Amino acid sequence: MIERPYLLDLPSKQSTDGWITFAELGALIQMPIKRIFWIKDVPKGAKRGVHAHTNENQLLVCLAGSVHVSMELLDGTHTLYCLNSADQALYLPAFAWSELTFQADAVLLVLSDQVFDEDNYIREKSKFKELQQNYEAGEL
Image (cartoon, rainbow, N blue to C red):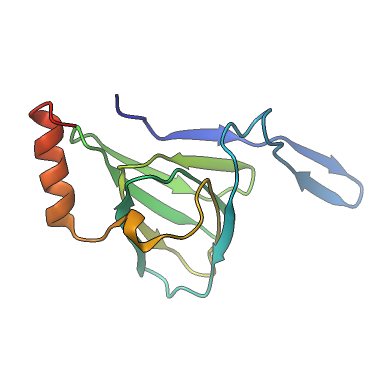
């Protein structure tokens, strides 16, 4: 079964001295977090990602600016999200080919359920297309 991406609203509270946004493991976030990283200073219009993972799920949070996320799933479904709010997270499941287009001054926080492992990456679109064909043939 293919996992689908989805948006997750993160709770926020305002006080006289600003906003706080939070997410608690187990309550709102259902996956263990093993790695956290952020991406910044990407030129406007540049793409990051442009790969899929075989065994990694991620949550993407745009802390500043905006990032457009294009995804393609094994069943050929295409989705497009615009992340432009620090109180929303996008769930990016394994086996989703993603391309992230950064706008000016965007900062993207990524929470991952895996430590970095190069063997977990599908970096060539042709290999992803092969996996799609295997999925359609019932071989995955």
